[in-house]
Image (cartoon, rainbow, N blue to C red):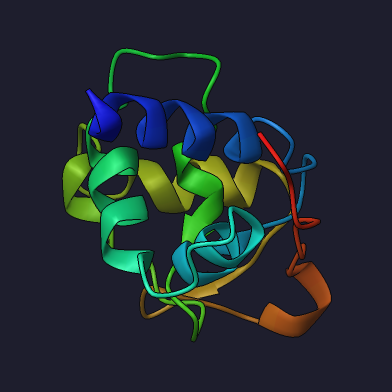
Length: 109
């Protein structure tokens, strides 16, 4: 199924996000050559709950908001995971988002 393949490509990019960095749904979509599929990237991230090797907490919206936080166990788990990596979060938004942002390279995977 094409969707499963797309999700695997999303996870391949997400696994490359460095510790202490974040990226956006749109940046992952652009890296995959599907710039208009940010929402699909979000669905992929929502579907990876049991995949410990996919750092879903490092994927946020284009403004640095923790829009996926309700998909994590516990109310503040996403924020706690980010703060454990030295990323400050205030009111569900990453402080100094540009400093922590990681731009994935365009891939052919």
